[in-house]
Length: 210
Image (tube, rainbow, N blue to C red; front, side, top):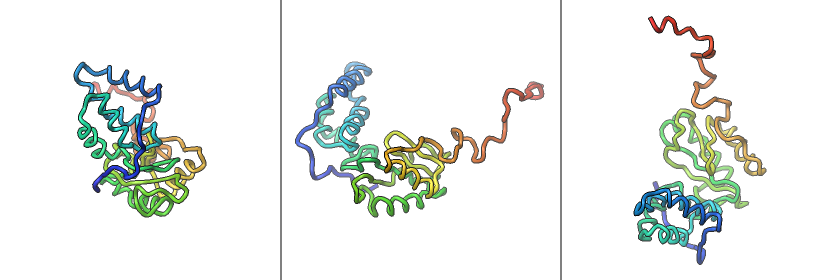
């Protein structure tokens, strides 16, 4: 993983919207007294969502003040987790490409090639129209449906380069495709569909009981 530093150009200040401030206070209240720091990740995530998909330094300080944490502790969290973007991202989508072993074995490198061609040769660099950015990250937790990418809160699974092109086309047009498997796979069933217990209602379990 490359060194993650704060973006050079920062806004002068950050404040939660009234709705997000109320949400943040309610989230903090879910934790026992003195344990509010446990809310740091959801609060940082909400701040990132409010700020157009990237997390500015003033937002980190605001969250630290709300939780009674030292600024450096919040900086450490924000710079460690790749879910937090430290520089501006595409207005329409920031694409996380999973590069961990299962996805790599199933073609993640070809997905990276699509991002380099469609978006930018280098990760974290805005596309020419400012609508897209991308990066390669570690495991996103959908290993059974590899290869996959995540955009915002949604995962797009069972991808080929052609299917990723369609996903990007959807975001470009303002009409993102339905999240999940892009080949119609249900959950993590075998590719091609289930091969056992196809009709559970008609299954005969009498022999299993003997």
